[in-house]
Length: 102
Image (cartoon, rainbow, N blue to C red; front, side, top):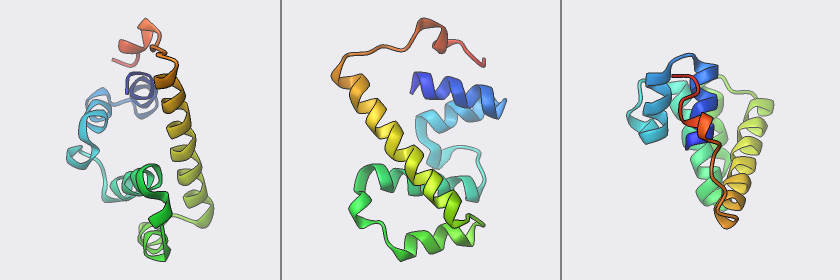
């Protein structure tokens, strides 16, 4: 949350929304398209076996292409891997990440 939140604060240039997303994206001030993307990313990270045609259709209805969907799935999968490895190794974010983009 700390490291990825810092990256989002910097890239989005909106620390308030970045922190809202970090706490609970479902209540954040984001667009329906962004929420659909995050919903899909959550499904990939929590129940990838259940992803199906309806999930792809929902993203396509928001203008996501097949390449976009691949990227969302790849990023969600990679972040899941990196977060699990960070937890297993008791890795802590660098102190500077806590204040980046604020």
